[in-house]
Length: 292
Picture 1: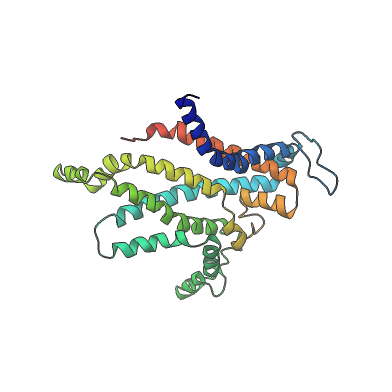
Picture 2 (picture 1 turned 135 degrees about the horizontal axis):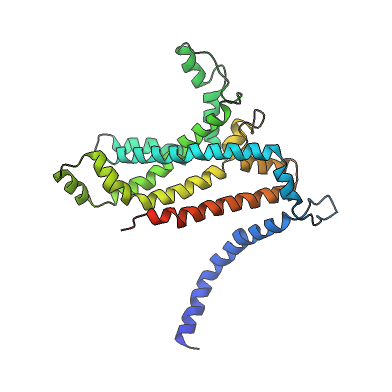
């Protein structure tokens, strides 16, 4: 056997464990879910039968699905730019020389290391009517009491605020690492030329941060679609599905109503949405990224 063939076999053997895990836990479940979406839900000893596109037709006729889709779109359009913008602002601030910079960085990053269930319970206390922190502040200011999680107009916004607070510190770490990797001579040259801080950020820092922004944006989109922990703890989708997101709706269909065929169709839709967004990000936004 030639030396080149031996190296190729050795390389494939090294890749084999990762390939097995990737196929077994990522690719095959996706294919199996696609197949299950064309079958009815098994009932006891009776297996599922081929129903074609009936599960997808039921999805289109489901008002809760459309409500969850609109809620998720609003949730994503708010959390993605807000969390990224806040993360960038915090990173720019803690990247400067100041007293207590290490403590400030730790304070910003602390929400990230907390479990999501713990974070949701902390904010549940904040939002609790009557004696929650927000209610105490409102009472001190003479404002009327308000049930933030029990009002259809504010339930989704309350969950959105928790998500932004949780994710901004995580994204800040990537921006801070990118800022510290920039050549200090760039700032020195800008200062010599008399450029303002805003001009330096807009013309130098921001273009060089685009690879980090693309990476953070991909993660932000994924987080906006897979959000379920906070919904379960804070509102359980209520009131009247005002805070129901797509993944929570999928959870209810699959594990509360036990309609696995319809849940598989919802999963396929989520995979298609995420794949479409990823393709747009990598093939459209990637052209605006400056890697050098």
